[in-house]
Image (cartoon, rainbow, N blue to C red; front, side, top):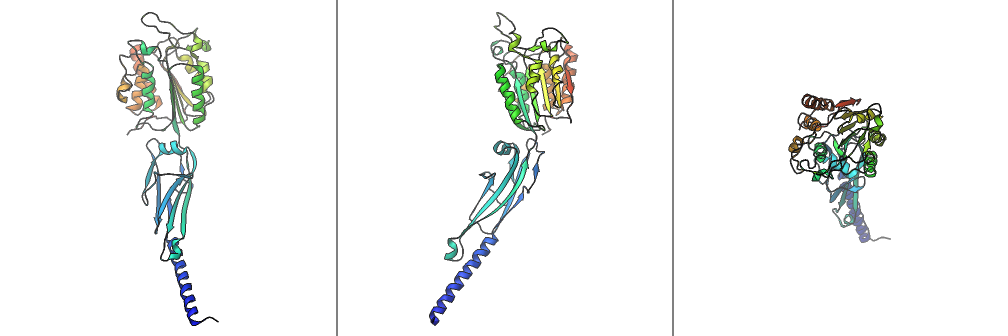
Length: 377
């Protein structure tokens, strides 16, 4: 039989345990994590360059610490509580890629009003799933500068055409988030094919893909023998000798068309800046993509170029204004300064060089929508 003293001790012990448990339950229940942004199932499919993905979560009640995860990876960038966190969309895609992602917040709770709850630790979590799959802009540029770098007065002539165009698409005026970018200045079929194959693994149907080819060009024969056209390089040993490398060290229009044929994009911008470039338009029309194909001149014309100096360290505005190709220069000024679409930029370039040099650029456009590469800041 229990003594009165034992009953009192048992009652006190039971009361403490019950009180401690009740307080701990209240403590845990009072601590909750609510993710308000992004919402479950949200789609980020129309992000543009400079846009952000916004995260917002609120923790209610006492907590010791918390962590945020994206796809199970601890993200130290998201460290504010109860406020909007703007994650640059480009950085997010660089870190996590496109597709479906999970965003999880975990909260650690410990301690309490009695020794019994000090050993108790609870993690309260909230998680949502969302999709990030906006169009990206990819760029590949091909030229040839190995000999021209040493050929006064035209140093870096092809870089002066390709790199400013590339940097427009990387600038704060670029409309679309940059994706895969590559340039190549010493022609080698294997290297170029490798670059295009890598591009093929990166781009999707909704993406914008800009392919720019700027180098010497010449022709064997005339239409309709289109496949004899070639795009080649010089074996310049200025001032002693000028000559052409054999056509098989260049690229024919049909070769370039074949290499681009596997791209999925329905927003292909395909530009060839060379003399005698019309065959590249003809073969570009045969691509199955939706595209805008632009070439600098007709089959029997030269593409006019002027370059007094070029320095890759100049500001982007200065480099655009000193592009070697007049055709590309006016086109890029239209994109970057006037925020023109591809149709308007081509027409500006056409009117300029045709009026001054009797050079006739050509284009073929079957894009599904009007395409702008830059936006007003």
